[in-house]
Amino acid sequence: MNTDPDPVNTVDTRVNTTPDPANTPRRAATRRPSKGADDDGKKPSAAVRLVALARERYTFVTSVDGRPYAVATDGPNLALPLRGRAGLRQRLARLYADTFEGDVASQSALADAMTVLEGIAEDSDPVPVHLRVGTDPAGRVVVDLGTADGRAVTVSGLGWEVVERSPVLFRRSGAMAPLPTPVLDGDGLAKLHALLNMDQPAFRQLVAWLVAAWIPDIPHPILTCKGEQGTGKSKTAQMVVNLIDPTPASKRSQPRDIKAWATQAFNSWALCLDNVSTIPPWLSDTLCKAVTGDGIVDRALYTDDDVVVLTFRRVLAMTTIDAGALAGDLAERLLMLDLQLIDGEQRRSEEELDSTFAAVRPAILGALFDVLACVLAVRPTVRLDSMPRMADFARVLAAVDQVMEWHTLGDYLATSANVATDALEGDPFAVAIAALVDEVGTWQGTAAQLLEQLPVPGMIRPPNWPKDATRAGGRIKRLAPLLRSVGIAVDDTQRSRDRHRHKLLVLSRTAPASAAEQPELWPEVAPLGEGRTPSDQP
Image 1 (cartoon, one colour):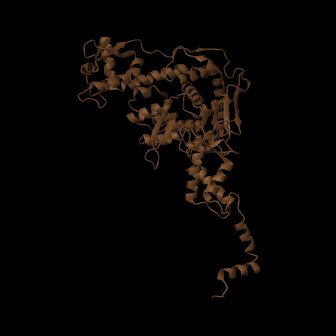
Image 2: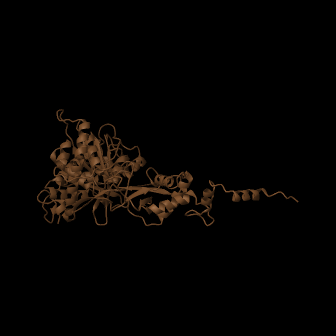
Image 3: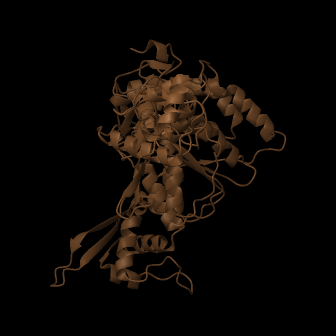
């Protein structure tokens, strides 16, 4: 029988009788269950501790487009994406390292924690998450200043103010930059005009467009700065975008495809396409949809059956010397401002313009918010005798005219008619239709008959000339608004009386669309500057 002492028991006895003072606290800490430990005293995993840290400091929501976000319970009202740059994942990794000194969460622990938090976010009903501009339940316009402390500007018919915490939930993107704090200054609009190469009618239309750009629930026409080289188009567009939605990339090249465009549009409230020379059909349609509201569905990353949705309505600008022939639907969505050549004695360096703009931008913002407050006060009472395309924007122009005693609505509609005429003249098929109606007065027949009767200009058929009756019928439907603007009515509701029941086109001459009629406005409100300021609204 072996009488040697058991080695394990010998070690235990030796440790208990002669304890090591340096080891005793460590062993006691290991044996005492830590906060959140399992019943058996085992320390919880890093993923569990990450989730606990997140739930202590954040609430989790899902946006209406299905994206999960985290919102600090004691901080700015900002929606943080769970993953990606400047999202919750990075902040949680740092918080973990600060809380558990000497311990760093692994990538797998962070991934597991994000999956759990996404599930928590999905338990809540979807909430609106805004980008730069939103509307709160009281109907106030809220503009995110983009600062780290989450301050915002709220604007109503009673005036505007800077608030420490936004009343609506905003998200941020890497394409955003902060806005300066606006200040009250009676000369803000004059300071803006001094920076721009525009006559008074064009400048007033620009001011109205800037004010409308902060009203998020309406379509906004595409501001188009047109002129030859040396007219300051690009600099004008840069300053305009940096008044609405500052960004490090205020001027951008044309996107290469719809997916690239969707990514840009999803992350910026205002975008400017610089030096546009031609607009391909896909981009023309895409810009039109971005004005009125667009949504793009794509396959979610690393999945086969899930999708992501990008929805947006954006404020757009572009600069061009000559964009070429414009599609009719795009032409109707433009606010065209022609810029004149700057005299060499009046030209200023970009450095001087940038420094001056930075100095006066707070005053310009304050002046624009003043006008916006007055517009919000009277807009519900504005009525137009006739509703043009971009009717919501037209009502904003009418409200601006009422409070400022300007004539931006008439100027805008007159300019729009000129743009439509130019677009029509740039389309050989539309020109041929107009010539036919001018010759016969009223024409009736099928699309195939029309295609046979129209003379092809030149010896070679133009690339965009319809190749068959189906394409001709669709093309006429797209051209109908432009034709109507020059006094040609298009009726495609009739059918032939033979057994084939072919669809008939009826083209007839009418009176050209008239310029804007004066809007009917009520009640009478004193214009801005006549004893009426946002601070003393009724």
